[in-house]
Length: 584
Image (cartoon, rainbow, N blue to C red; front, side, top):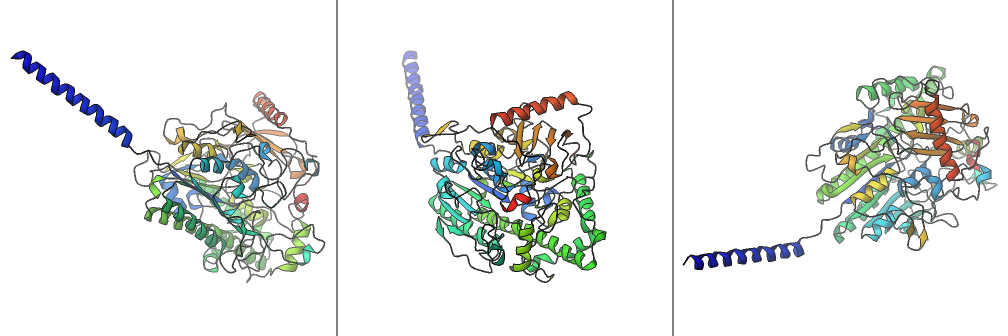
């Protein structure tokens, strides 16, 4: 009898095990694959480190602030000092010189023309994340600015780089209210006497851009149409939302402009710089050890302006602030749709700007361009009343650009922190609807623009091919994924071994940990000598360390020289001006 009971129990046990085994097999076969995250890459244009609310600004940016509350603010994040050069790294993970952007198309050092690495557009030496995501079944969208080629022989537009849908302009910017270009055709003998039309495309075809619709609105509406299509297809999507705000011409909706006007009229240049410096410090966005940046002699003193000029300058800066507020509103529109459509929780969101604020000032003898100044004077209305409208062509200029960076020095075009340190916010998937451990964190972890594409690929679980892609040889990327840091598995993004170097216009720097070694030519207002700074404790770069750390400086110079030798970077004449070359 005992044997019979044992046999029965054994049979039941074996039957149960067999049933569990079959159930597990069934479960394994029916278990749905984890859905790949959507990716929303938001890129502001020519925006300073201290220009948005989450980074201490007086400009109202509630939607960007919301991103900062849910994700991480990176306060020691760097890009290149100009638009297209940054964008080449942002979409590839490569050094810009490796993929054709060792030169900036608006200003080229003549001896570099035609040389490998200096093509001024993205070359086949790279594979873009848009291509790789497309291969993995992503819908891949771009709306706004491209500035990586497409209009030049031998170059490709977004559709040639894996984007499934695209909308906007190939160039670096345009009028924000109509289809006019922001610069004349310098090669046309009659170019300074006429306005030029910008080329717009929708999915590779010419697009008749309507007048009177602001750039932020037209770009965002089209991106929302793209995303809605991806949602209907139930496919993951990558949306590259490349705003042209706050790139010149400084134009914005009137109702947003005048709310800022009294503030800037009251503060002036130095007042705004001091207020932003204090705000950055109070909010922990720069070190408590940081000191104010010294006066830059390329800028003007507010007291030297007439009352009329003060009023005009205040309205120009107010228009710039309005451009940033409009951009924030458009980001809010996208976030609202994603929430309504149930897409927000499964979306990786990155907000970044491409470089610091634009300091090009056409009439300035140091940082200006006489031909551009002549064209603006002939073709546009320079009155106070016209500021912000379609018939205006204003820039914030050196003095406001310097003020906008708060505790930093310099601006766009320069490798000082004001030109290359920008706001970056990263929100991992799920952070909006669940408690993310690092939500609201402010981090001074050293990171670089090349790290964003590698982070995107890791979240999408896409392997980079490294050396060969669809029959073409490519340069392996050198960006580092930030995902381990975001997941709390690491307290750093880059160690001291993960240094990087950069060169443009003959000016260069190398970053290793918190230390930055930098050299700026005399033609770009430097002294041509190497200097060493700790840019975490000294973001204003006002306390050189080379005298007390000569060996460290020597070591970092050697790293820089290994970078320039490897990439065949050409020497630039010490007195050449990138600004005077801006019309070449």
